[in-house]
Amino acid sequence: MKDHPLTDGTVWLSRPTEADIDDIVECCQEPTIAEWVTIPVPYHRADAEAFLNEMVAPGWAARGPIWAIRLRADGPVVGMIDLGQREATTSEIGFWLAPAQRGRGVMSRAIALVCEFGFHPDGLALIRIGWRAFVGNHASAAAVRRNGFHYEGMARLGGVQRGVRRDIWLAGRLATDPPGPAADWPPGI
Image (cartoon, one colour):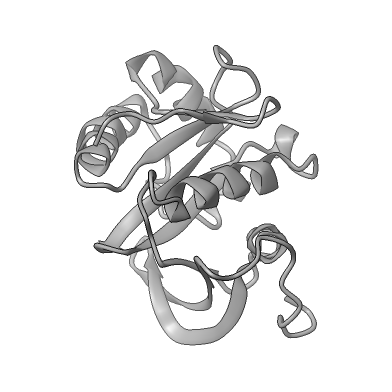
């Protein structure tokens, strides 16, 4: 799959490259990212290199794009977002954001861009984008809820993080779902 940068004029998404390694390593030192994302801890330069070679390159090759989130076209990486392919017409969204950018709508904008590309016939032509997060990741839940993802339940011990099984929340958005906030989430999530 050819690289496909996305922007709304406030957020820029582009394929991460070797030039981004130092920024990725710096961001992944943040404990609040490691708390919710399945990254190695501690996170080293070799981990970022492996990420580029073993996840980013194969992801783009197999219709599973991974974008760096930036605040300008040539800006440093402030987060990551991806659509990991599950089947030909379904993907799962995943993301993280540096703490300094949280609470400013950056992730909601990135999710909107990725979903638009994922569902568009000239993009990935998906019919479903799923989401899952470890129970307690309220910020992630809020971001997908704002983008039309419907709560689908909890999988008890449904995920593994660094060898420990954890409960996960599940949600999804169909191509036919409107992009605005979904109202069917249980209180407290």
